[in-house]
Image (cartoon, rainbow, N blue to C red; front, side):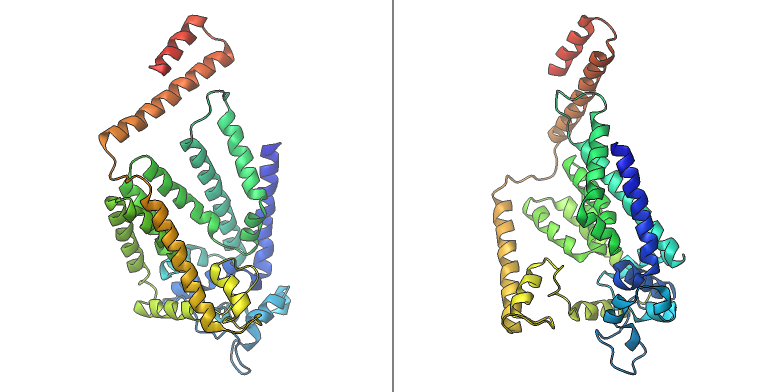
Length: 362
């Protein structure tokens, strides 16, 4: 039943991707696709379209409000013009370079490929998480597979996952490198963990906050690896349009006007809805107070994180003892599985089970 439910959800999300391609005005993937097409043409991935183009502007009929209202392909003008008139995305230039293979495909094909990759990324990430966690002693053979089906089905049935697919966002694709970084650090491979974190920072800048715990826990090799890979992604981002691409990216970050929308759950979003500063109608119009309060709240969160991390024991670079402990845990898990298999299929006599149980305890 879980497998059937997961298959139905997968087919539903792929179908949703096709529907999304026929009404691209209200989703992020359309913006990513247009940026990648500009990068593929050797131009800056970021357009210079104002938030509300005035009358006479080539993109006037393609303002975000009118794109949201368009429901069918017949309601819109030329697709190439619409791609050119989409507002710039807020991802670094390396993100658009990574999207360039999809930009060579048609919009429906690219949308479906995006959805399939997102589902595959989520499935592999869930499996890697469960594989890294020990099973309880009372578990039976096949418990991990059942847990995988249940967890993945629950993830795909979760409303935020549906919203992620509906708007063509990137969260599920980033889940896999997050898990890979976590597993590497957990198993004593700081260089590999830092490399995955550096890639994440090159695609989404807010992952840089994870440099703070690495620094406080004196994970020097992980820090060096993360910064090195981040530097490589910055170099890759120069490919489409050089430094101009980064200049346009910085300008796009400074021109965000939608922080007060109801789906923005950030601290700045809550403050903007109350004190303004985002083109909305707040309770009290005090944009400078909104900005100052946001910075104070951000600082308080960072202070809390630093205080909590400093209270933890310092975990410096992994020693041979740490690696030996990890190997011992894997051997204990393997032997425990053998005991469970013998109990399940009743092969051999009781002496075999007792010997294996004794070996597990040793």
